[in-house]
Image: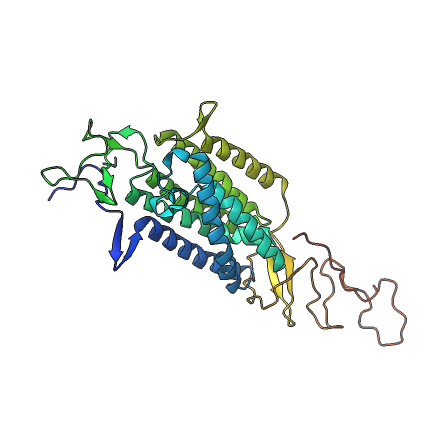
Length: 361
């Protein structure tokens, strides 16, 4: 049997489990969120954080992000809201704006992290690759909903879009699915949702590897994610043909992407400093430490314990009297002189403990 020279559309967008109608769109986002949590737990543990905090933050951020994403969709594309009383809330029919989700979910996440005393920038860096994977997997839901495709194309991976009604493909007298455009039944379209999905996965790998190589730190890995994602979103938006509000000839999403890109670029260029990690003292106090050098690997610390409070100082981890001299100080002459003997001219005083320096959260 020969394979079709195009990407076929699925004939359904949901299935039933008893009275429950399960939509593939929702399943795609749930799978994406689960992967994001797993990856973020791994990266958060690697910098010394408590992986259990990731699940706690997700319980707040995910619902907030969904609400924010739906509000953004309702405001920017009111023409696509289903014409029923519950239309503005009909998430299962598709319609989540990424920027509304990032804004509302981000604000709620910052609030919860600050209440726990954790640096939002440090947590955002750990979260960036997982968030991209969640976006990429979530875009597969658009495939089942037959939405967010692009203009016509003759490419071999062009999408053949079916006409849908009630979650099922409409079929002609011969039983074959009817085309989305009845005037041009053989027309294929750019699968822009697939382009964005693959772009998100690629950017996730980029952010992970660049952060691992250059140890960006202080929210710069998250800023890199924002810049790379919005750069891809620009050319993908140019291919889409779905209805959208426009301003000065550009889709509103294009303007939002441009502003977000510039903000992330300014942050990435202006914010400097070494990568940070968390250190947990015996009493459970969590301290933010600067990374020692660009080529030194980040050690995996012990998981943080409750309460998790980031302290803006580097702790004295050695017991009193056992600290080593500062390696930057030359070895004192006459260090082996017996007690009571005067120190030789080159002898240095016993090294003092280094005073903690402030580290911004």
